[in-house]
Length: 207
Image (cartoon, rainbow, N blue to C red):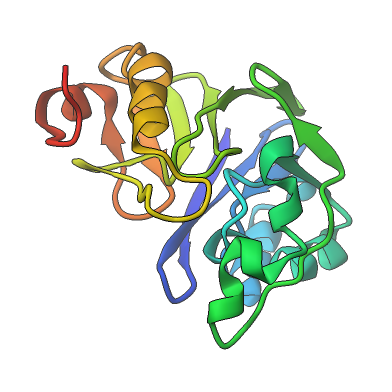
């Protein structure tokens, strides 16, 4: 599997590029800024981007979504509960910045346990609300992309519209900590971690 992690935008969002080695079909997860950097990484990997997948609808994760869709023709995938955030800066919180984000609508609205395929690579969608109502995580092999649900020894904010600490902790317990300890967590911000590390050392999680 082709895998690249780019840190983009003012809030240093992790943008992930995945691809299938054989078919060169690819996807971009959370295009949060710096379209030139994302485009360069795609070209270097010779990928044809089939999907742009959003872990949630906040502006720092969708900042260059419109440009990326225009350049690639890829389908936008987002959980149905966050779908309205794409085109409404007040809801995606970019209205309070210098660059309000008006993104295209989702082409496919996701549900819990949906599958997303690029070539021979398959990801499973997990609905993991708490940071937003429609936050998702994505699982493939020993990897899980968690958006702003859980970070290295920390968790996502729950004080924004649609946030809930109770839901976030339940999502972490039921959808993340049930995985094997060596499962690698790639979050929306900051360094990667593992399920075992967070079970042992994350001070926000009560086991």
